[in-house]
Length: 432
Image (cartoon, rainbow, N blue to C red; front, side, top):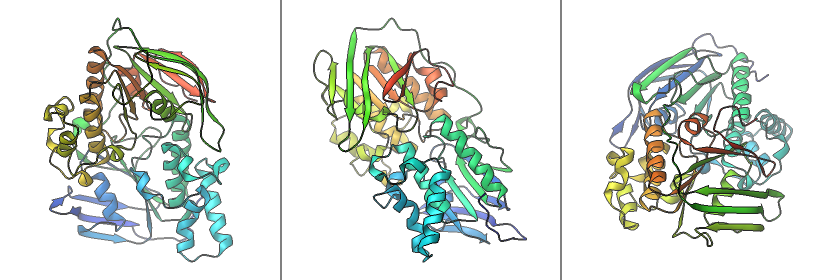
C-alpha cells in the first residue's frame, strides 16, 4: 500500500478564492479543503478551466488567491505527449526520484513498484515511443506515483484508458486514499465511474456534465456501396512482434464503424493503415477500389496538436483552403481566433475534427474522437459524424468510449491479440 508515513493534523491543501491565471484570462474562483485520504472532483465542461486550476495548484502556472499546502503534489496531464521525457519506460518512472537525489536502490524500488501498480510491469524495458496513448497515460501516472506525493492531481486520465485498466486504476486510487494520499481529479462527471468523491467542485456549465448515457443518434441507414475492403491484413513495427494478424473487414459508405480493444491492441495502427499512413506487412487494403491515399482518406490523430499547424484554428482553415463554416456543426466558432496553444485538449480536438469533416473524404478515420470532450461537444461530434456518413462517407473510429459507440456507431469491431474477435452490435462490456 502506498503510505506516506507522515501525519498531518490540518488539511493537506487549502484553497481560498483561488483561481488560475494565464495572460489576460482567469479561471473560475474555487474554494477547497483537501484532507488525508480525501478525493475531490473538479467537474466542468470543455474549456472551463479544470486543467489550468490543477496546473496552478502544482505551481506550474500563476494563480490568484490563497493556496496553503502541507505536502508535495504531482500532476498527471490530459495531454501526455509533451510530458514524457525519456526513451524507456523504466527511465521515465525513475526520472523524478533520480532528480530528488535518492540512492539508486530507492530509485529502482520506487520506479519498478509504480510501473507494476499501473499494469506496465511486462513493458518495463520497452521504448516509450512504442506505447499506445493509453499506455502513455498509465506511464505518466507511474511517474507521478514514483515521487510519492501527498496529493495526486489527475487531469481526466480515465478517458483514454480501456475499461479493464480503468477499473484497475480506480482501485489503485482507492488504495492510495487508504494510504493517506489526497486526490483531485478533473472530470466531465461529478461522480466518475468506480469512484466515490468526498467533495465536488463544479465549474459548470451543468448541461456539459455527464449524468448518464447519450441519446441514440444513429439511424439504421441502408448504406451505400463498399468503400473500404481489408483482407488478410497483418502489420509489425520494426523490431517488434505482430500488431495485426490476418484482419479482414469491410466498411460501406453511409456507415460508422467503431474499433475497440485494450490499450495497445492495434486500433490506432489499423486506422493509420487504412488511411495510407502506414504500409501493411501483408494483406490488401482497397479504398474506393484503389490504394489508400490522403486525397481519399483523412486521419484525425488522437493527439490533435500534431495536426494543427497554424497559430489559430482560423489559420489552419486558411492553410487548407477550407471555409469558416467547417466549425459550425460542432458549435466551435468561438475558438476560431484563439491561439492554438491556449486551447484545451477538447477544443484542439474539435478543431482537428472540423478540419477532417470539411475535407469530405470517402473515408474518415478518427482516433479517440471524444477524448477531452464534455457531454455537449460529444453529442455534437457524434451528430456531425452521423451526418457525414449520411452524405456518403465511410466513418471508422477508434475509441474506448462505450457510451459514444452505443449511441452513434452502426457496428463495432473488437481487436484482441492482433485479430478481430467480435464484430456486430455495439454494446457495453465487449472489451475485457
